[in-house]
Length: 330
Image 1 (cartoon, rainbow, N blue to C red):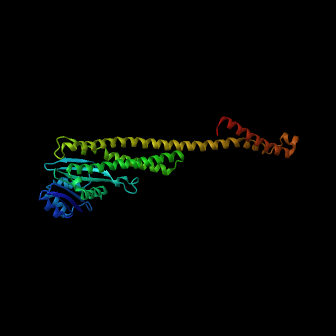
Image 2: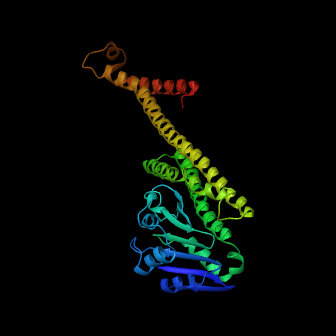
């Protein structure tokens, strides 16, 4: 599916047909943005003709749009720059299947046009496109401005994801301190896996953005260099934040293990106290349970021995409780 918005002689046009877009491109528009959503990871015949013949893109660049690039990419050609970057669009079960939330966005950029190509439906691009239709004088005042808006949304997806992770980690930290469960550990490991997957794609993103921060690049004016340097700085800050979160998740695992150990220690302590308290009972019952005529039978009789045994059991239990209480063992 293809859609485009462009300006020809100050007239803003929105088009959804590849052949019409190719014809209008021959009229040399002042600024043009084309967005292509690949269906089944394939270009239609008209879309392929548009990219290869009208814009004369290199076949390797077109091929890179059809096959996933697992790392960011930036290639400079004679008449355009090809960029492949990655962002995050969270799915419902993003913790368990985080890699499915990672999308790739390919861009062809020149002085007059931006072409975005992606295999997933990206809602932020739809939002930017609708805003451009409503306010073309603002959104299309320059190509660098449009490019900055796209880059900014991609980078913001990392910040939003980190905020979601922070909220989840804060909840899990409270949960494991109060009452650690096996399900909590599973969620912690899912977050750890997601953070490492996020770190894998984020660490190398800066290589794709650094080109636009150079004063000698042919795509943006000097006044917009500060905007692209801001993107580069955000990317660097996000990488540092991801590293910090990866350390935090390891600490959270240690907190979980410590909490489980503490709970186990409390259980073992309780069972040890019970066993120790009942030990005199076992000794007394074992002593008087032997089939032997003890001297006590002659002194106080059989009934008196029973009361003596019960009394010894109660007295020793009370004495043990008093001793443990003074020691502050419970």
